[in-house]
Length: 451
Image 1 (cartoon, rainbow, N blue to C red):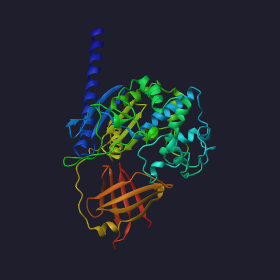
Image 2: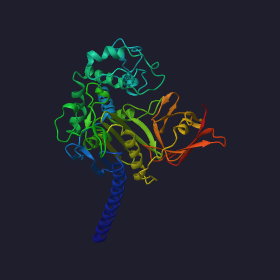
Image 3: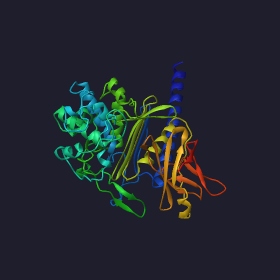
Image 4: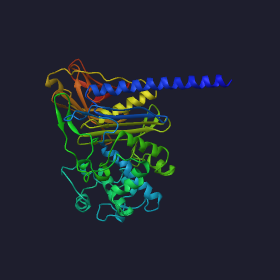
């Protein structure tokens, strides 16, 4: 009997190993397809049920040195920093050093509505504080003494708690509040409460001055003919909203720390990953659903780098995608969706090389206008630019990600960053544009032309 049981255990182990190898091969095929098309240059780590299915680098770490990315490559993670900032705030709340109901004016006076803005509203972007990165002013480096007078002068977007708008200013303010409450610098606080306990030894804040063979060079353009390095953003500007650098391996440690409540207790983590009543954003996390499963994530975009960090706790899935090329974030987000589809045994497509055709500019001009998807109240503003259409969706006044549509023929277009989006112009017998048919991930929508 013992021999039979041992044999059954062995067979089960072998079957699981074969299944894992098959999944790893599929993951590698998917991400490698993006890399070969020049749509991903960086590092990836994908894990499920405590096992790392894929951990690998893709493309150049430094084109000039002919060195390649690997799992030790260091990237700026940009706005994923917000999840760390939120965690430190919640840790200070756990330690009864501050409250989520504290008002902004308790720490900084002179802000419009400062007596009404709560820490909660700063965390979930319902404060109404204007996003300073949407202003025309270019700030190259700063500190608290210089940035605060500038931030106080920004006109609020709305009254606190009445709407939602993503604002880096919220998290810059939270970083300075952390310093006041903790009695240490923001950098020291993150190290004390997160990096240290989780042994995230390859993570830090000042990428510009990092001396490491593992530091990835950020690029504005990176292909066979052009390798244009991007300027590194000084860490004092994005600060607690976007200054952290890390590796895919360290980011997996971050996931495990969150999953196992090594940093935050269960109540704090639940609060962080619960969306506000006004938007699907919690405290430093985007809350979404893919194939009926709850997905917790955050993306990042900064000069030379793009990133996406996402996980599903129910199936113990963690996906880390870090890139050292500007403008790569949307591709990375779509890659994450496809990885989830693969792991959830749902349909997905491998990206293929497509070549746009040249069509008369007058044809494109005919498609300019506003289109409305009535059933979900989404307005799409279509413009033309250099042989392509640019579609800007918005809902209730809040813009979504822009789609760059290239022509397959005179009426059919594809998105440069989303392989599963097709747009077909609906034209009547007289040549007038009535609307456009949109097919995305098997879901069909019709947008009526209203202007």
